Image (cartoon, rainbow, N blue to C red):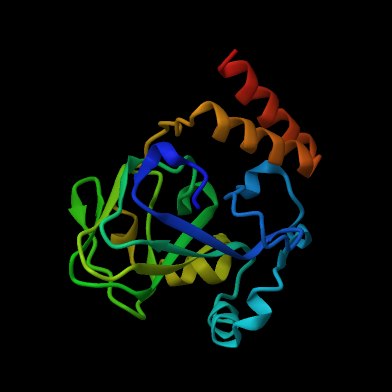
Length: 206
């Protein structure tokens, strides 16, 4: 199950295909800004069982940090929230590829509905407020890919209309248990920046 239970109602679950250290049980979205080296992100054993997904990831000619399957069950909702610094301008982009969806899945960014269809690939500026609801009778499953921005990606973003919305600096809020688990994961990375982020999270909520 997704770790941030404050942000959803119903069932929202995650499978890690690529993660820090290749740990299939690590579903936390740890940003590259935590100071990890690129080679610390590795494919998990689960991705090796999914050759079609592995092939899809090979399309991206940039460093992939995290890759996950995310399932939003029928009847579930993801409440409005922001993913801090998860946007092209901040140097890290997230892509969504719907593998299974239905016409009653509503994904909104700043009250604008995003009409994602199966097999399409969407860049989403998730530093902006967004929410999702699945009012259909089937589960929604997305392949979600976090990448570092490079020259290849900049070429894909050559259309200036893609970057038309302003970003926000609003930070996400977590319950006590989720915050503790994130801090623990950051400390396990044992990089100077990750430790600094963990210390900052602890001080902000003392």
